[in-house]
Each structure stands twice: as structure tokens, then as C-alpha cells.
Image (cartoon, rainbow, N blue to C red):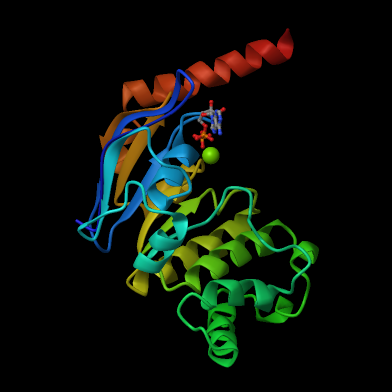
Length: 245
Ligand code: ADP
Ligand code: MG
């Protein structure tokens, strides 16, 4: 297994955002994470990427215990993650943002620039490469976030709603990009609300609710799982009720 998370929990005070989550990801897989807002998906990613230290549990990547390692160690070992809210340097150009990622393995500026240019090309950002990051729209920002992480040469990419907020056409392009990244040999764990994305990309899915993994298996089975449907409907009806109140 490339990544193994054993009984990972993360609490804030006495509230458990993630509780006893298990996940094993083999090299070359695309695993989907679904679940309603607040289910703990991003917090789980934080634990996997070293942006948060789990309260308990263990995370092993490529045989190394990463449970308490800092984010830099994760990046160096090959775990890259995108943030749900893109972590771009707003005033910097697109190419400079990607170079920040490229510097991880290319300490010399010229090499980093060459590497970043290749990633820019691959991610379809060439026309915008000299623009400031803040001038990009949602699809551009999502792409830039992916490009910055891709430039670190990850073996595993954790994509946190990287395809959210796109038009149907942009969504298809983004799906193609994820496929291309996968074909490069990069293993992927993707958090996504749009079922179409999960069904077309993921070979296996985990569903979260209230910090727990409530179902896992083939996407076509998980979407039919009663606990999963309940988790989504429960939230949905609650929201409708609140709105009409
Ligand atoms: P998801 O990504 O599935 O929408 P999150 O992981 O962002 O869910 O959040 C899970 C729960 O943990 C939410 O109730 C959220 O408010 C809470 N939470 C996340 N981060 C913190 C934090 N730093 N402090 C306190 N509560 C947090
Ligand atoms: Mg989230």
C-alpha cells in the first residue's frame, strides 16, 4: 500500500471532526471521498498531508510513519494536496506560483522555471502564465492550485474539491486533466460533491458522515447505500426546513 491511515481521529476540544477513519490506497488508484459539508473530509486531508496532527491513529506513507511529520516532509516524500480554498499567492504571476512548487525538487531558478513551464503547459494555463493569480477566475484558480502541487512531483495527490464551481464544459476539461495526471502515474484521492465526477473517475469510494467512514466500496454501490443516502437527505431536508422557517 502507498498510503495507510489507521484509526485516524482529529478532535477540537471534545468535538471529533474525524473519528477512527481507516483508508488504504494502493499505487495507481483513484479513490473518491464523499460526504455532506462538515463530514470531516478536509480535516482528514489535513491529517494525511501533515497540515494537522491527528489526535490519535497512525498514517503510513510508502512504509514511513508520517503521523506527526510536518507538511514539508509530506511534500518531500511525495504527498501533494490542494486546498478547498486555493492557497495561491495572489499578487504573484501564475508561473511564479507554480515555481513555488517547482523549487521543492529544482533548487536552481532556471530549472524551476523550466519545470514550471512544462507544468503550465500540461495544465492548460499557458495563455495566463504571466497574469497575476488574483486575475484568474474560478476555473483558472482551481487549475493553478493543481499546477502548483503537480510541480512538486507528487506520487500521491489529494484533491480537495478541485473541480467545484465549474461550468459543465469546464468540468469536462477538469476531468480530462485529472485523468492525465493519473496517467502520469500519480495516485489520487479526490474529495468531490459532484457524483458524476466520482462515478467517472474513482475506482473506489469512501463516504464520510459526522467524522465517521459510513460506507466504502465501488462507487455504484456506495451511492446506493442507505446510510449514505440518509446522510445526504438528512442534511438536505434540514437545510430546506431552515430556509423556509
Ligand atoms: P468537510 O470538508 O467534510 O466539509 P471539515 O473537515 O471542513 O468538513 O469540517 C468537519 C468539522 O470539523 C466541521 O464541523 C468543522 O466546523 C469542524 N472543524 C474543522 N476545522 C476546525 C477547527 N480548526 N477548529 C474547530 N472545528 C473545526
Ligand atoms: Mg471540505
